[in-house]
Length: 248
Image 1 (tube, one colour):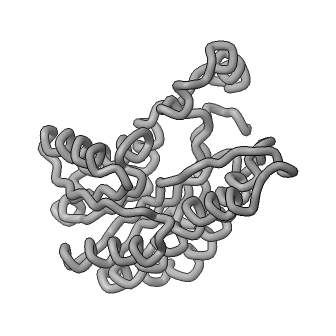
Image 2: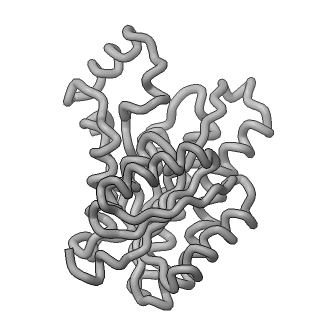
């Protein structure tokens, strides 16, 4: 790592567990100062402790991404405190599954607000300090569901598909400012959410995936690490699918 990279400041939303936690730990090991953002203060403090135990630097920021003003304020405060902002990973998300005919507007709006609108707010707020530094990496965690759809997830699929269009637009608007924007589309990843699935469902999923296994959070983190690095500097406006071949 170069000295410049070691000084970079990265924000990771949904950093209290699962994929977000893995991303935060990887960016910290890459030399970034990582700002951990989520709603669960206790879990955030635990992740911060793990990062510091490994020699990294992290700070915690309790925030409800459904509150646009609070989220924008959190990002601005982090940028102001560090006098820079280099990497933004929009990972936080939620689900309220249900078949289309049974899905309420409230459930549709709630998922759109957290999974799509919050990312818009995050990128918009982060753009100014990134432009000031003439460097930025915006990385949005979408899903293969946003590419292929999924029964019972109209709200989630719509939000994740929206992230693809948003990411490509940001790439076009800010490329000349030294800012890249990319999306990562995970497939079935081994997290708390998939741990509750029954053995029959797990085996069925594994049979659908050409690599015959679930992905690990650390494999998503590796993709983020590349896109956030100098090595990923000529990659922008892309959707990197990390799904073991599920959608190939």
